[in-house]
Image (tube, rainbow, N blue to C red):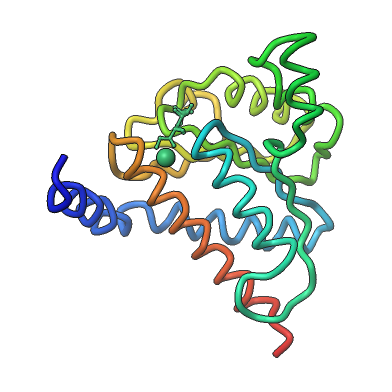
Length: 187
Ligand SMILES: O=C(CO)[C@@H](O)[C@H](O)[C@H](O)[C@H](O)COP(=O)(O)O
Ligand SMILES: [Zn+2]
């Protein structure tokens, strides 16, 4: 794909983000309510979405732009001992499920990122979190895959291309951080 073509596809995806603005705003309200109630955010995904998970968890725990209190968020993609022990002894399909069982509480909000919507370890972890009673969001592409019929709520980035979907996901994540700064800023 040429540079111009990639940029055009990126712009097309971003121009369509207002189509899902209501979903993004609902998530923002739910995240604020989760923090207010003493709950935490749990992020997970594979590959680029694993990177997005830890990137966003860090923004909440450390800071985005404004000074505000530390916000509780965890990425289930970062502990190499947990990831390797579970995958070696059990299965990669349940690598996030085990951590959900250990860490997730009913008042938490779970965000599983999967551009295809079909990654088994993401699906299994969302189902485990639903059993616990947490609120479960899936961030996918516009097709949404299997997660469309499983997650409680969806952010369906308006593209079918993995890279463009990931670019939209990180934009949405940053806007959510922006919103938490606006609500909780102390300066
Ligand atoms: O970053 C990329 C592609 O841009 C890849 O690492 C990509 O995230 C991986 O292939 C993932 O395994 C794809 O999984 P998913 O998004 O379909 O759940
Ligand atoms: Zn990537």
